Length: 150
Image 1 (cartoon, one colour):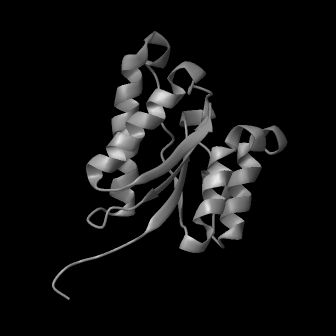
Image 2 (cartoon, rainbow, N blue to C red):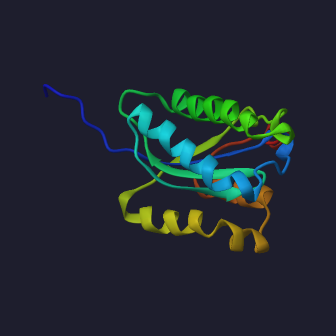
């Protein structure tokens, strides 16, 4: 084949350092829009970005020329730098070191989209800890509880 083609949709999740509730309502939408621009700049398509004060979810395509690790690293690095410009209370902002990302089949993209869109009502019923562990287990991902949180 003379060209390289791909269509990989990811559900990516990561939290603030020590899960501090630093994503305040006054910057939330602007942060998500900025992250969307980062994704577009790498060649991906952001479908939805949403979350809570201590973590975010991204549903997007993975650019065919970027590894998952580089993709997440760029989003986290650039958005962390940006958020620090938003005021004194964000000067110490950091994302946690790790992330979780899952491939999403086209047959369930709408379900994952709705799940991300409804993060706030969802978290009235279930905390981030249980949510992440359930998602890891649903995807048969091995994990060590000692290293999930930083």
